[in-house]
Every structure is written in C-alpha cells, then in structure tokens.
Image (cartoon, rainbow, N blue to C red; front, side):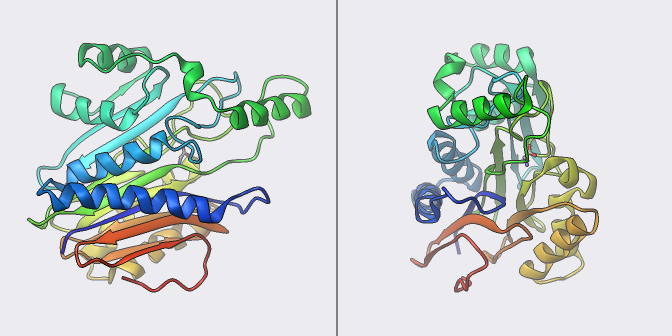
Length: 305
Ligand code: GLY
C-alpha cells in the first residue's frame, strides 16, 4: 500500500496559530507526494515533492518563511534518505537556495559526500544548476517582525532568550515496491547563533530510512533530538518488533526523559503509518493509495490509518 505522511513541525501552541491552515498545508503536501507514487514514482521522489511544497509554504519553518537567526538571516538545513540503497544527502547553513531538500538530494546523487555546509553547499548548488535566490526573498514579513521583536526585547541582536520555535517540515513515504524514504527541512530555531546546526540534516537524528525497517522524520528542538538520535531510536524499536505507534512513542519518551520536546513520524515498508509527539501541537497529514486521508494538529482524536 503506497502512502505518504508529512509533518509541519511540533512545538508550543501559540495564540495566533492557524491549525486549519497548517493541516491544509500538510494535506496538500501529502497529496503531492501521493500523486508522485500514483504515477509510479519512488518513495524518494514522493518525499522530495512533499517537502518542496512545504518549503514553499510560508506557514512553515523551512525554505520560504523560515525563522531568522540572531543576525536576522535565514540559514537552512535539510536531509533526504533513500531506504532502498541507504543513500543519504544533507546540507546545512544554506542561505541562497529556495528548496534545500533538492540540494540535499543533489549532494546524495551527484557528490561523493553526505553533508555539505555553508558557502560550500551554496556553491555546490550552482554547479548543479540550482539557481541562487536573494536571501531576502526567503524572509516573510512575519518572520522579520518576530526577529525585530526579539531584538527590541533583548536590547541587541535577535538571539539570547528567544524561545524555541518549531515548524520544521518532514515527509516519509513507502512506494509500490515497498521501498521507503524520508526527508526533513528546517530553518532551525529562532534567534539561533549564526552557524548553529540542529538535528534535521543529521542522518539518524532528524532523518532516517532503511527499507528493511522503515523511515522516520523528526521535529522539535535539535539540541535534544541529536542526543537521543530520535529517528534512529524509532527504527531500533521497529527492529525489536514494536508496532509503529509504540516505536514512535518510545523514542519520544526518551526525548522527554532528557528534557526535550518534539515529535516524529514514521512509515514501515508494509505501509503502516505512525507518529508521536510530546509538544502541545504537531501539524501532520497522510494520504494513502486506498484513498484514505487524514490530518491532525493537537492531541485530539484522529482516526488512525
Ligand atoms: N528540529 C529542527 C532544529 O532544531 O533545527
């Protein structure tokens, strides 16, 4: 059974949030990924398509609409993994690329490396024909305003006591051949120090896919997710025979144990979908080949696929 499951970030509930908009954005991305699978595309193609849509949606903290660092700049991180061949690609601290997930895939497919960072990653994009965008085009008025508010309240740069803002995006998919893939993309945390890298571009932390077990994508504060290797924990639990929801919950329980907060989504090669989150909210949606669809935002009852 082909299926795509996406998330639009886990974090604290904020007054001005738009749960219906977040769910609609996630559902549109899941549908985009499923359309790729319906045309016979691979799970890898599907997660890239879904992630690109979310990166272009200014409601989410990735690509256009990403949060700003302490200097008022966008620095983007992303990774993608093909569970069939255990190939992976990732980028971090990218400033001039509209769709970092596609650059991560280019690193995987057209370089001998797994992770490129900073100016080298932006330069590699040019060698692959990925055009440079003016970094200001990635900044939305809302994120500029939030950065200015942080600067005013801290009396200097927009870092320091800015609370974490989640909104990382991710996708997992299983294709008709039972192969799985995962993708994750983020602007990181608001007010982060320039050069900070979170979990999203780190294989086994923000993203992991292995078609013998499943695929997973994480969201939440990277400083904690890295330490529990969240997506790796999910696949480890699957390898021990746990059902997918319990595998996700066990990984999140470990995150909470060390003071972290976040969420994770996962898929198995058999098309089972699972998720868990400790945060007040996580936007997510799925679409399956049998026509079933669903979306959620908070821990309200959601009919499981
Ligand atoms: N989970 C996204 C980050 O911490 O950068």
